[in-house]
Structures are given as C-alpha cells and as structure tokens.
Amino acid sequence: MRTSEDTLLEAGASLEIALEAGPGRGPQAWAARIDESLAAIASAVARHSRNLQASGGGVVEVSGGQAPSPGMDRQVKRLWRNLADLQREAEALRSSVREVMNPEGEGSRIDEVQERAAHLLAGLDRYVREEAHLILESTTTEVGAGD
Image 1 (cartoon, rainbow, N blue to C red):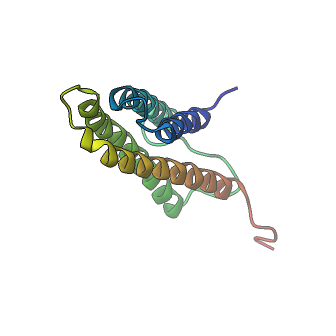
Image 2: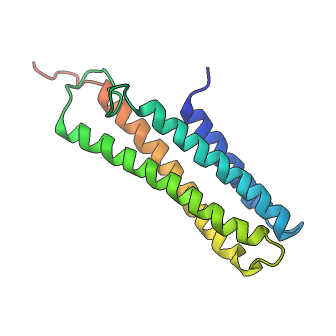
C-alpha cells in the first residue's frame, strides 16, 4: 500500500532527477520536466495535507504512548504550516518555470529556478524527517516512566 509520504518522496525524486539532467537539451524541454515534477509535488503535498486533516476539522490524531499535549499540538500545527509553505513554493516556482518555457521567456532565470527548486527539495526532505520524528515521538513511551 502506497502512502502519501511515498508520493511526496517520489515527486521529490522526480524533481531531483530533472534538476540533475540540467537544461542541456534546451531550456524549454528542461523547464517542462521541472514543471511536471513541481506539479507532482504540489499535488502530493495537497493530498498529504488532506490525509492529515480530521473529518471534523483539525488534524488527525495519532494514538500512541503519549497523552495529547500542547507541545505536541504546536509541533503538528508547525508541520502543517510547513506543508502549506511547501505547496505555495511549488506553485510559485511553477510560475517562474513557465517563464523559462516560453520561447520569448527569460533563459537567465534558469539559475534562479535551480536554486529555488533545490531549496524546495531541502524543505520537502526536512518536512518528511520532522514528520517521521513527530510520529515516532508520539507513539513511543519512555521506559520506566511512572515507576
């Protein structure tokens, strides 16, 4: 069974591959591959965000060894904000990429697109690690706690 995290990772890997290929075959073809990868990231982030949302609003609760706490709530809300930031950045970056795709567009924006895409990938990676850490933290208990 594929999870929304798998989709996030696959979309990120697709962007990384497109970036590594570079604009050698022409900026428009390269930008089209980048745009396709960014669309996949935006879609995966949106799907992941919907999966985190509880049916009555708020965030899905993770049952585990720790009682809900204000600290845990703050961490979850911060992750959710980070996810929203990632989606906004992917969409904004797509606008820049479309300028490169336009034959009369600015080819000089390639360096900017590459830098921003690398930053987006780093943010996506950081999000996945922080989410995994939060899940682990929320589902494990301290040995000897309450003894």
